[in-house]
Image 1: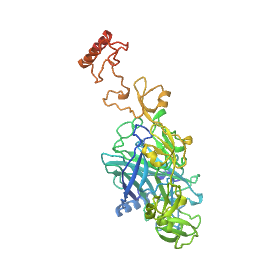
Image 2 (image 1 turned 120 degrees about the horizontal axis):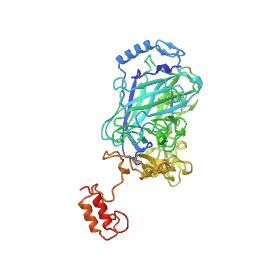
Image 3 (image 1 turned 45 degrees about the vertical axis):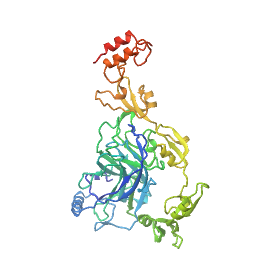
Image 4 (image 1 turned 30 degrees about the vertical axis):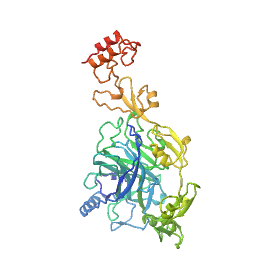
Length: 523
C-alpha cells in the first residue's frame, strides 16, 4: 500500500549507542568462507547518542509536507497520533545487548543484509515503528573502520518490496565508525516521537512486519567476496548470539549471487540455508513498535526495578528495564527480593539456591545473573559443540567448547540433531581455477582440495592461486629457481634414492635427473 515511500538519506533520528570494548576473545579459525564465525567476548559498554538538530527537523517537516505520504488510516491531531497504546519490544535473540559472548559473522560481504521478521496480532496494525537495533563488531582491527549502511523496513517478510529505506550519508545519518582493536557497536535507529514524519507499517496480509540492516560499503573489501572473505582486521560485521538458533524461520540472510558454489542469492531464512551458510544463532537485533489502535487494556502488576516494586503494565515495566511479575500481582516486601540476588549453583549437587552474590561466593557456589530466579537459570549447561574441523562433540559446557575454539549449540543440544559447518579450503580445478569449498564439494566438482584453511590467494599475481601452483621437481630446494644450488644437491645425492633429487621418479638419482635439471635451468 505504501511501497512508493522508499527513501534514502533518511528523515529520521539515528542513535549509535553502546560502543563497547571486546576482550578475551576465542576465535574459530578465520578461513576464507561464506560462513566465517568468530566467538568474541563483549564487556565494558558505553553509550553514544546522536541527537537530531532543529535544522534537520525543520527540513524533514518541509519534506514530509511536500511528499504528502502519511498513511490515510492513521489518525492525526496536531502532528501526533491518537490513542495511548503501549510500545512493544520484539526480538528473537536472548542477548541483553550488553556484556557477554557473541559470534561475529566475518564472512559478511558488501550489499549483504541481516533481517528479522515478526508475526504479531493482526488487530495491532497499523503500527508505528519507534526503534530498530543491531550489533556490529570488529575483531583485532588494525585501523579505524567506516561502514556505510542502510536500514530497510517491510510490510511482510523481507522478500516483499521494502516500504522504507534509509541509508547513511555521513551527514544526516552517520556512517558506522569503529576504532581499532576488538570492539562492538549497536546501531540504534530511533524515530523521534515528536517528529511529524513517523514510520507506519500496514498488514499486507500475513500479519508480519520485518526490518533489515544492510552493509552498503565495507571499510576495506579488497577482493571478490565470493572467493575471499572481507579482511577481518579492517572491517565491521554483524553478530549472532551464542545460545543456538531459536527462530530459524524468522531470521533472514540476504546474500550476493556467487553462483552454484555460493549461498542462495537474495533473501533466505536460516531454515532454508545449507549448513555451509547458516549462522549458529539468532541475529542480535530487536525492534520497538507501537500499535496505532490498542487491541486491549493491559492489567498492571508488580514490576521489580532493582529492589523496588512498582505497579506497571508489562510494556511499561519493559521500558523501565524491570522484571514483570504478572498481571494483577501485588507488591509486597518480598516481591522483588529476587531482583537483588543471584541463582547460586553448586557443582557437587547440581542444585540452585537464591543467595546474595557475596553469600554465593563465600559458600563456594557459581553465581548466575543478578535478578534471575533459579527456576529460569540453567546451572551447568551441556550440549553439542561444533569444532573447527567440522566434527561435533557431545555433552560439553560452553566454556569447554570455547576452549576448543568451537561454537556451542545450546543446552540440551546433541550431535545427532546438529549439522556442524564443515571446514573449507582451496579447491584447485584442472584448468587452474580456484574456489574455497568444503572437501566434499571439491570432490563432487572434480577439484583437488588443498586442506582446511588454505586460500585462493595469488601473492605473486601470476593469475594462479598459490595453493594451485605446481612446483617444478627440478627446483630441488624449492626456492623458485633452478640453478647451481639445485645442481649441488643433485650431485650430492648421485647414485642414491633421495626422492627430492630423483627428478624423474625412477628410484635412482642419475643422468636422466641431471638432464631434466639442465633442461629447466633458470640460473
